[in-house]
Structures are given as structure tokens and as C-alpha cells.
Amino acid sequence: WHAPQLSFLFQRSPFMTILHFTRRALLGALLPLLAASALADTWPSRPIKLIVPFPAGGPTDTASRILGQKLAERLKQPVVVENKAGASGSIAAKQVMESPADGYTLMMLATPTLLAPHMYKKTGYDTVKNFTPVATVYDLPIVVVVNPSQMPSVTDVQRLITYAKAQPGQLNYTSSGPGSFGHLSMELLKELGQFDMRHVPYKGGVPAITDTIGGQVPVMYADLVAALPHIQSGKLRAIAVGSPQRVAMLPQVKTIAEQGFKGFDAVSWGGLLAPVGTPKEVVARIDKEVGEILADKSVQERLLTAGAIANYQSADRMAARLKNDYDKWGRVIRDKAIGVD
Image (cartoon, rainbow, N blue to C red; front, side, top):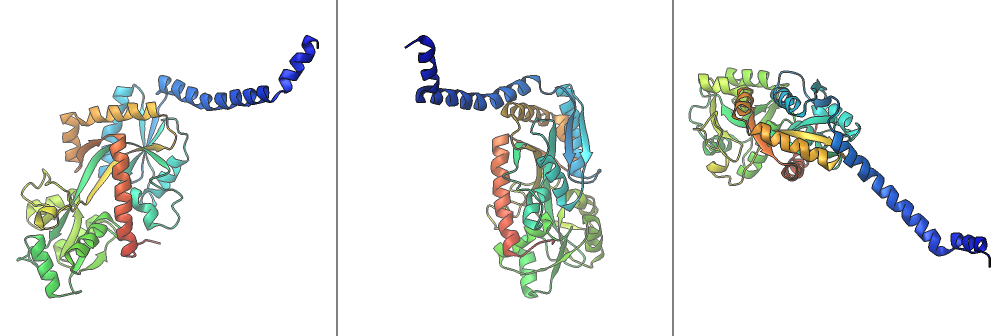
């Protein structure tokens, strides 16, 4: 055989065919990794978009702007906050899910957006599967309040339960809307306490608080931010907070867990999400920056002024919290047949 004939046979041999396809497969697997590594080395090289799934002015928007300003200072790139409200944040979430996974589009997740796939039939996304958790940013405590003129004897949760059981199905409570976190939290408390109250939903926290003060509905599970001025003025009485620990804004008010419901945990919260596939190095960088930003006392004070409590949790811990809340509150929504469409 001549050398050219031998070369021809090698090229056609099974060994060379396997080698050829193995090399192509390895190259195909390595290219995305190399591209991600290169992106992480140069990121960020242009402005970052931070999508807020609610209108401007609320605590989620304010927290996003505080964090965005600090991130811009540390990353040396602008962080542009964009409000995209609608359907409990579903519109914003779908936009972020469909954005390039390059670290230049983030979303400030809030609890309504986390739970929207349980509430709406067609959100187009799965909160657990379609996003990459980056870091938690804040907690928004909620509080059970009563009208002190109408319910002078109700000063804690056990007295509320006794009051409700004395008139089964007759006592009304309200929240900021059907499927709101206050609504879900009270339904869970009713289940655990084995008592009944009828939900009278309002379109927003302000009108619900106004009518609770006016006596049209004597009980509300409210956002602490909105209720606090009225608690301080004596127009409303706070009887419990839903968080596992007492909150600094109402240190004298016991948690529901302290009042006979061990382990009760109902906290609305927010944190950063990125599209699935965002490079791990970029996620880790943002995670690190958020942790250092939220350790700053001045940032904590600014968030507290907006009614939010700084609460940094790493990407791994946020992922666990997101999955836990998605499953826990999803069960409540299904069991109580709560939905908005």
C-alpha cells in the first residue's frame, strides 16, 4: 500500500469517525463555557436594566431605586429602573424571562409576582423554573389591625378568635385585594386557628384602611407601611405581626407565632431575579455587591423610611425561600380556591 491509500483508510475508519465526533462534541460543550467566562470578565460594559413589576412610588419601586443607585456606583455603569406594572407583575416577569441571559436585565421580584402563576391561568412563566435567583433585598412586614372603637376588647389574636367564634361567619375582614398577601395570610391563620371570617376585598390598601378606620370592616390584614401612621395615631390597633420576629417599627406588638401559632411565617419580600442561564460568575458578582450594599447602615435606614426592612440572603438561600413560598402559598391558593381569573 502507498501512503495516500493508508491515509484514506484511516479517514474512513470507525476510530477516526468517533474521534471526529468526540472532538466536535467537546468543542460544542466548551464554546458556551468560554463565552460565559469571557462575558463575566468584561461584565458590566454597558447599562443594566432593573425591571420593577409595580408602579413608581411604592416600597418595591423605592427599594429598587435605592439598590440601583448603589449598584451603579459600585459597578461603574448606570442601572436604569424601568416600571412595568400589570397582572401582579406577570407582564414584567414574562419580559425578563424572555430577555437575553447576559446580566444586563434584572427584575425586583416581589411576593405578588412570585405567586402570580398560582393566581392567574396564563402568566406564561414559572417563577421557580424560569429565573435565576440572585439575592434577597428586603422584607415588607404585614400586620393584623382592628378598629379599636368597634372591637375594644380585641387586643391580641386569641381574643380575635374568640370574638369571631362567638359570631361564626358574621365577622368581616379586609385586605388590599383578592389574592393579596394579606388575604392569603389571614386565610392561613383562619385555617390554623379553626375560626371563620368573611373576606371583603378592596382594590388597594388605602381604601381598605380608610374603611377599616371608618368601621365598615372592623379587621384588616394590612401592609405595615400603609397602616403604621394610623396605628401610631390610635385609629387602628395592631394585634399581631406575621413575621417570625417582631419588627423594629412596632416592637411592642407580638408575632402570631408568639401568640400560640408556633412557626407561623407570613412575610412579603423582594429580591433580584435574572433570566435562566445568566452566567454564574455574573450572578455571584451581583450577589456579593448586594450583600455589601445592604450591610451599610445608611442604606438600611433609607429602606426603613420606605417601610422596607433590609434582608440580604445569598442566591442559594433565596432559591430555597422562593421554592418554599411558592409551594406553601400555592397550597393555600388551591385549597381556598383563590384566583383572579
